[in-house]
Amino acid sequence: MKKYFNKVLIANRGEIAVRIQRACKELGIQTVAVHSTADSDAMHVKLADESVCIGPPQAVNSYLNIPAIISACEITGAEAVHPGYGFLSENAHFAEILEAHNITFIGPTSEHIKIMGDKITAKETVSNLGIPVVPGSNGKIEDLNHAKKIAKNIGFPVLIKASSGGGGKGMKIAKSQNELEEAFNMAKIEAKASFGDDTVYIEKYLETPRHIEIQILGDKNGNAIHLGERDCSLQRRNQKVLEEATSPVIDTLKRKEIGEIASSAISKLGYHGAGTIEFLYEDNKFYFIEMNTRLQVEHPITEIITDCDLVKEQISIAAGNNLSKKQADVIIKGHAIECRINAENPRTFVPSPGKITAYHPAGGPGVRVDSGAYSGYTIPPYYDSMIGKLIVFGNDRTDCLDKLKRTIDEFVIEGVETTLPLFKDLLQNEDIISGNYNIHWLENYLESHP
Ligand code: MV4
Image 1 (cartoon, rainbow, N blue to C red):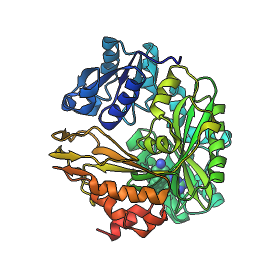
Image 2: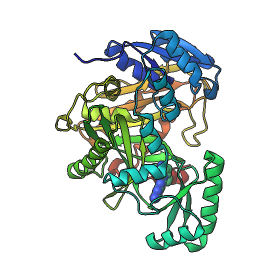
Image 3: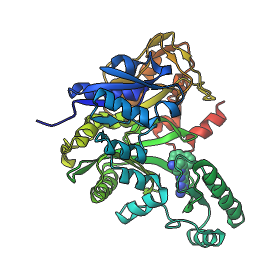
Image 4: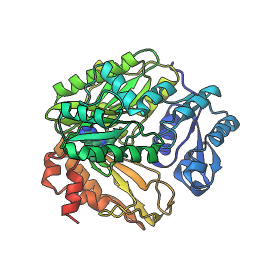
């Protein structure tokens, strides 16, 4: 018999809070929801065994309010906390405080969160473990002369990145030597303003890569596996829009190659929990950019093609159990695509919060909808604008695209604008149908199809 927790507090909201509760319930674990005063009517509160109001609408006062969340654990007797994604999920300080209160953080150690949170340390660490990285300064750039020397070595164009960054903030491209000084100074100023830390590093700028990430799992007993890749190249301003697994450009051999490098690295690192190693992929080569130490929004596409419940695995790992699969048991089958349905204008992406007057999710075989929405629910303006995720499975990519078209036509959401019409358009596009896209494709498409 595996050991789990009796009661878990979910320090999140929306679809991911509902998703985590579903896993808990199936494992016989009691659930505690936390919520702001703006979320009293939210689905995650209605479905929980217990709920605690942790503050006013603004996330800094509620979903990011560490003392209030610790108090909610103490009051309800929760033994563990699942942070979901965003909010406190990659906050090393939060993981440490939970530990100090003898509450289990369902995630990696605070040390591993810290290592991966600092992009220079992360790159150096994974590079030493055999993961291929983008050529560049191996460490911090001291001054302009240092930047010049490195740039000369790797060749232009180069990219200056903030060590405390991630998600694209504080990045500056220099196409040639005469743009270097300006890019270096601007990157430092932006990094200081955004993160209070002006440490920057330099990399060769890859001009037309895809964004491909590897899902990994490690347990507390030294076992580690990979669950293949996700192609997340279709994004706008660092917000993913549609993700697919497998990637249209990765074959079985390439997957095995990079997957084994990834799982061996995290095993050597002693990493436990779920994680994602992000790569740029260009000219058939992988280049590490960042590692995420949390569950990701797009985790369902991996769950579907590997028949693995990542949230149950996270909980099981945190309770000290072995991974439920060995690498040889991970069989990748078929194709899955996720569309993020946001309450936004489908061309400008301007948020459209408000009351959902009608809600009829698509259904049928191979269709999964992860959402916290219901008919009559009012989407508050304080948080991200995701209504839910439509995830479809097909025996191959063509089947999957056919099903996606059918489900987008079937899905009804009224009362707010949604991104559903964008997906309808994308599925008519030759490049999408053939899988011929990179990280810049969607922004170019939106510019030419206003
Ligand atoms: C890069 C790059 C090109 N070359 N690094 C953007 C966010 C951050 N996570 C890393 N990012 C990039 N790093 C090198 N050396 C291009 C990007 C990038 C990007 C990466 C993944 C997904 C979408 C992107 C959109 C613009 C730029």
